[in-house]
Structure formats: C-alpha cells, structure tokens
Length: 340
Ligand SMILES: NC(=O)c1ccc[n+]([C@@H]2O[C@H](COP(=O)([O-])OP(=O)(O)OC[C@H]3O[C@@H](n4cnc5c(N)ncnc54)[C@H](O)[C@@H]3O)[C@@H](O)[C@H]2O)c1
Image (cartoon, rainbow, N blue to C red; front, side):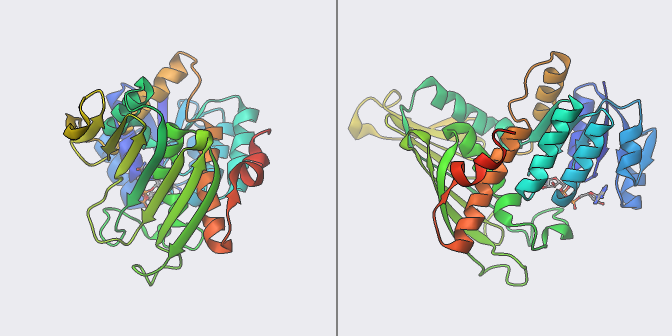
C-alpha cells in the first residue's frame, strides 16, 4: 500500500507514521510552497502538489491522510474517497454535523475504509487506563472527567486558521477530551455547559468551556476545555469507579491508581504510580492500527460514525452554553445521523 498526505504540519507526523509502518509515501499536498518543497526534498517524494484533487487522482496511492485545517476536512475527505482512496482524517471529523453527514455519505458511496484520528485512544496512559477499567479493577464507573488545557498563545505550530469564529475551541480541541470520555464511558445522553471569554480576548470565540454530561448507566461526566489557560499542556483525566480511582493524562510518564485491590485496608488509601511511555501524539500506533484494519479487512473502531458522535457531543456543549439549556444529545443530535 502507498500513501499520500494533505497538510504537512500534523501531516509530517503521519508521514513519519507511514514510514515507520513500512508504507511508502508517494505524494504530498500543501498550499504552502515552501513547506511542500522542504518535505518533498527531505523525503524524496515523487509527487508534490498544491492541489489536493491532483493528489487524489494519483493511481499509485491507496490511502490519503487528511491533515489540513478543520474546515477543509469535508472537501478533502470526500474528494479522496471519490477517487477510490481509503482515508485517515485528523480530528475533529468536521466542525458541524452537515459536513460530518456528507463525509458519512461519501464513505458509504465509495465503499472505502475511513478512520478518524482520535489519537488519545493510542496514548499509552489512556490505553492502560481503559484496560484497567475494562478489567473491572476500579468497579463500576460513576464519574469521569477530562480536560483539554492548552495555551494557544504558546502552543507550538498553532496556525492562524484556528482563530476563526467557525472553529469553536470545544469542538476543535475539546473533542480530544470528549472522545476520550466517550471511549471509556460510552455515549452521553444529555449535556449542559457554560463558557466564558477572559483569556484570549482578541479571539472571536469563548476560550473556556465546562460541560457536564450524563452518560448511559447513570455515569456523570465533566469536560473542561481552555485554550488560554496559563499552564503546561495537559489532558488530565480522572476516572472514579466504585472500587477505585485512576488519574491519568497524556503528558506524564505514569498513571495513578488507587483501588481496593491494590490497597486492601480503607485506612491505607494511596495512589500507586504505574509507569507508561509518554506519547501524546502516538500517530505511529494510530497508523499501525489503520493499516492492520485495511490489510486484514477489519472494522475500524473510530470510523466516520464514531467521529460524528464525538463532534455531536461537542456541539451539544456549544448549543447549551449559547442557549442556556440542557441538550438531549440522543434526541436532538444523534437522531440526525444515526439512521443514515
Ligand atoms: N491529533 C492531534 O493531536 C492534532 C494536533 C494538531 C493538529 N491536529 C489537526 O490536524 C489538522 C492540521 O492542523 P495543524 O496543526 O497541522 O495546522 P497547521 O496550520 O499547523 O498546518 C496545516 C498545513 O496545511 C496546509 N494547508 C492549509 N490549507 C490547505 C489546503 N487547502 N490544501 C492543502 N494544504 C493546506 C498549510 O499550509 C499547513 O502547512 C487539523 O485538523 C488539526 O485539528 C491534530
């Protein structure tokens, strides 16, 4: 199999991921000529173009990674699918449900495989967290929380395109934390949110949001998203179960586990430190999984429907904070696309 890539900043991580998985990259696309030429020369790529349609038409490419700004995901994914390519698209799938639905339709029409790159599902700390939860060690979940706290003033490589009213930070960035909670706690039923605008006052969007979700099985959830907070980047997450608690994030070399299995007497509560590798952008593992699904015709867990559910869950928080009301996620949002 051979791959092509659209957008060469996050896309460089995809390029490295394909090479690590012995997949040749035969084409690249970026509208910035300097970036395009730099990457073409460095990796000796046969075709470099500024037009994503030209890339999609190359016969010598089976897979296209879409790592362009969020607003272009719809067009870039659809054009690649319609030219018969499998697609790996960066998160978020899109910034609104209409775009997500058009992508879902294109996947169905093309018969090609599609994966949304929700990379937290490959971060070692979160992978271990899910394994422990699934093993039953912390009992039944009753409260889960995650946050996306990332100061965009200092975040490396954050392009200007994010400063746009169409890109709500809770969808663009918060989707990481929302998807993590959906992966671990299942689909949310309802959501309620507040947001404010105190840090990045020259941005056209609220820069902080807190959302409360009610998941299936009466699990309560909370997601905090800030793109202007003064602190190192983190996705600090806490998972409370009836028999234990886990604290994990994507930037630490360990997770913390307190469980009745680990600490048998109630007076001896403590957290055990379990070491993990730090890999908050584990795109190589994401691509390894994608290639395995393609080569062995396996279903993809994070397919277009899963990506849409995460976007819809984020949109619920945006609607709630704007309209000051609880949003019934299943009835108001999932119902729009679930039976397509
Ligand atoms: N998984 C993650 O943790 C993670 C991290 C960062 C970004 N992302 C996602 O990756 C995508 C790209 O983000 P980024 O940070 O690399 O943005 P960026 O602005 O740093 O880079 C985008 C690149 O795409 C190019 N580009 C812009 N418009 C294009 C077009 N129409 N056709 C082809 N190339 C085009 C730009 O020239 C630039 O080189 C976004 O969807 C973003 O949300 C994901």
